[in-house]
Length: 315
Figure 1 (cartoon, rainbow, N blue to C red):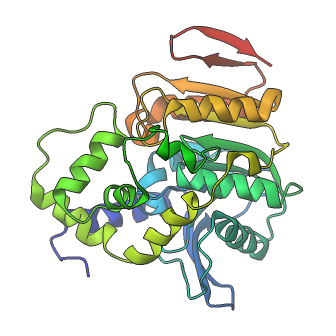
Figure 2 (figure 1 turned 120 degrees about the vertical axis):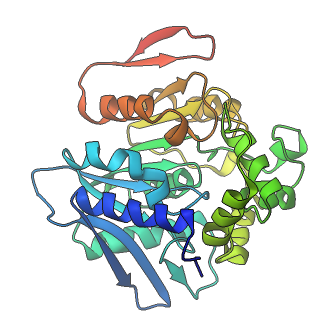
């Protein structure tokens, strides 16, 4: 339970106010199979606006990862921002832990809300879910944006030393931190310029509020991403796709961005954000929004930037 003087709980409340002030409301749906899905939805769905589904990663609930983008995007889109299973108020008693099942649950609530066409934006783990939605429901998902999402990883990549961690258990201990030391390690891996000298009391507070609930289930989500995963089995999606990556991502190294671009070919655009790590939504929100807006709204060609800073137009 959150402490009455918790900075994290207070921040959570501020995010709820921000979402509500941007024209969204909290909605919880019982899918009747032991699954409850929470989602922020428009107070009024406007048919003339396109629909945008924003899917969060492992780090926290939807509000913490998307708050910076809700206000500017809500004026142009019908926004739907779900909490994935075992985050926020979403939960299931079913045993499935794959991104395949997460994608089905998100699509089921979109069907409940009467949404038939959408663009999906996924950050990190949310990108795995968004990609799976595009694979399973190509008639509904029109475009895809993947932010620092290693959907093309192979279980052998860890054995070959691609990642900072040496095992899935080590990855879990960092991605789901239970001590200030592990949370500092996560910050170091997630940010190009991580905050320094954050007091342990703040870190413990964040862990108590955000990282202890559903810990076992979230661990199983991470394990399901890696176990028996083969790049050769990854389907190619046909929707126009924007791949956005931090130049110094240490969670999912930049090599995976180039691998995904090669896999999808001319159907995909790759943008590399300079001087950024994995948490591009927090470290470079203005630049991330610029690329989102360009892909979603602008008609001009994208500028694709490689890690050397060279730029070129891409149709």
